[in-house]
Amino acid sequence: MSSPNFKLETQIFFKSLQENICAALEKEDGTGKFVPHIWERDGGGGGRSMVLQEGTVIEKGGVNFSAVEGELPENISKALGVKSNHFFATGVSIVIHPNNPLFPIIHMNVRYFETSIDGKVEEQWFGGGIDLTPHYVNKEQAKFFHQQLKNTCDKFGAELYPDFKKWADDYFFIKHRNETRGVGGIFFDRLKTSDKYSMQDRFEFVKAVGNTFAPTYTNLMNINKEKSFTDAHKNWQLIRRGRYVEFNLVYDKGTKFGLDTNGRIESILMSLPKMASWPYDPQFGEDSKEKETLDLLVKGIDWVS
Image (cartoon, rainbow, N blue to C red; front, top):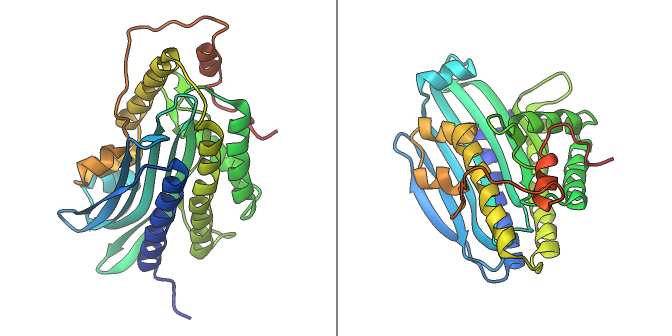
């Protein structure tokens, strides 16, 4: 029996995942349409960026597919601890910024990465994550979101959700603000063959995570899209978006990798909102909804109990 060709199979799945998620989001939005942008990367590979702007629910959203390869910059080779400087990477990356401040931002990335020497695979692994960033934390919706992720993880191993949830708490953390980006989710990287899991097992898990996105987020879209909001809510939304920008430009590994490997800049910065703000030292009352949200932006909250 021949070994799976993950380089080929992952691209097929990720392209299909992109199409399915775009269709589900368009249907729930009602008016917005994703516009495709086909691009090629100098050095090898390319992708298809799908961007929706000024929809009924979604102000700006991107669902990006890429499959790139070429020479790995020396600084990344050292950081990854690999001998080869030839790489291949493919995946889907999503960020959705809604119009309504009472409706959360969501991010997902699922990916496959390999390095090779003289055409022979040296290292290969899967990675990814999905996290929710409410402008105002709704505890019931945070619980629903985490329960969907736990349900997916539990199909593959009881240890996966708690391990990957903690990893997300640590990864999606804005150190200079001493706050989490949102209510977290799951994060995982360098998932390889182990005593318990084969590479095919890892791939099936990544598929399941990817397929969890659309039903989970469209449910939240349906719940929140008709909610009324005020100018004060919008002002807070812009501040929270500012925090999102800070994380993505300062800490996000995907952003850094894209910039270091000469990726398409519009696709890399697709994650940024159309508008954000940084008012000087904003203050909020102890009993305000804004302060309540800030108090919940901490690591270690058990959302599913």
